[in-house]
Image 1 (cartoon, rainbow, N blue to C red):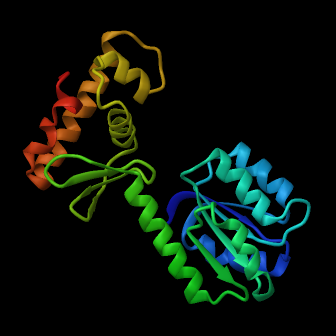
Image 2: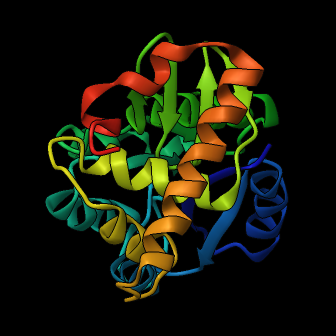
Image 3: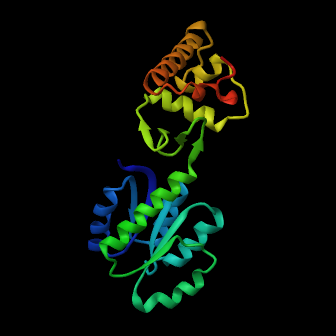
Length: 225
């Protein structure tokens, strides 16, 4: 399954950029590419970027400057630098960038795929909320898991879990949840009934499939029912 993480890739060599993009497409649904530092920073500002893979020598603004600019604003984004053998000493300037990795060009495919797999694994753990009874929910990928097994849930069930996991210390009425899940301002009984039916179906499905009743009694998720 491809990751929902958003990747920014900056490389001025068109052939290399296209070849790498093909590899990235096997791992990520969301890939943004450009050939220069100025556009890279613009793409960063306009999008919620999780990973930046930057060639160190790119036009307009070099890769290290781009990385420093991004890191000043974002401490969580993962950055990978691509560098030639003759440029390795430049990485001494990157000591405060907390790079996830650097790869020396020409980059071997197995080295690149190893970095990509480790990136996805690390960020998946970062975005994971631990529930009860060995359940967890990946906020980025919108995947509910029991132990390591992925559980198929509907689009609205994903919205519900995402909202509740983001607001674990708050209590919400059925009407409030209905407005969030169904993107409406319907304050009628129909709106409340819809959300109650959604939760009821979700609970029944989970109990029938996994028989883990404790999942539904995490106080801050379900106490409003």
